[in-house]
Image 1 (tube, rainbow, N blue to C red):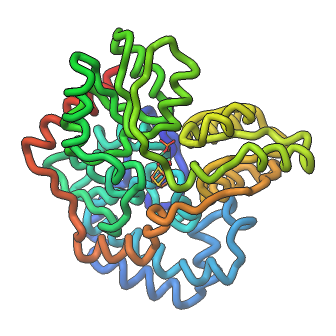
Image 2: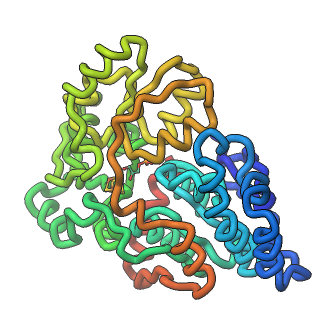
Length: 365
Ligand code: 13P
Ligand code: SF4
């Protein structure tokens, strides 16, 4: 597996999983933020076009490039000064995804990438549980989340006490916990999983019955593919629960050639009507590998924007839903986090130790 990497020079690279190489701070660039901002003011549109590069030209109109060029240049300069790297989830808007991210990907890619980073500061452009996972794997580093309120409906659906109660009700049954949970919930679990490896994780436990929490739809989708009996929890993603099978049928009427890809957090009746189901990274890979004429990504809206930017030859039908939590990440909140080194994620040592074991067990698979 490769990890897409965007350096401070805007050049996209692919590197082997877990080895992330960023051109780190050049000490001679102490006042680079000021210089970059001055250059931006001289010709904002040209500067924006230059730093955002070709793939974004069909996505953001020139006037929007001009609006974000100043922030992007400042963030790049701050990254050098702070020896910081930005991890960005696939749901980040294109200005973040293409403009300032060093590593992009799905939850699994970002968790793996977090293990091998050479940076003093890591900014997680995503949601809080993702930043906590980075902190758990990098206890000695400063981990920033641009907005502390960037939660997740799945993560908020379950507590550590709920997991203890589930164990009491199902003695001896192992607990596999979706990465979309708090550090405390991970600490009470046996192993973590993401949307890319949930079935493999469940089957790796070698048990006839597994507690797979907290997403009832992910659990139902895994249960359809495995002989392991699944016990779950009534958590739901506010973005993916809204897709309906009728939407797919209507799209197929208008676009019979469309390939329909659904995230496994969608209800099982939606996944059943789709041509493919996989994590956000798996959807990207599908488009890159198959080059469909028309594609539908049943997931968060920015995902289609980012994949479309890389595949201008593919037509995207977009019945997407916005994640209100992911959208709390903006260039302004990222810049403020780098300027102030806040909000920094803190996980109590004992919780972090137990949660790390759960995450590392998944990463070792
Ligand atoms: P992925 O692991 O597929 O990127 O999903 C994370 C997420 O929050 C989806 O809603
Ligand atoms: Fe959570 Fe759903 Fe948003 Fe992903 S898209 S962060 S699962 S609420």
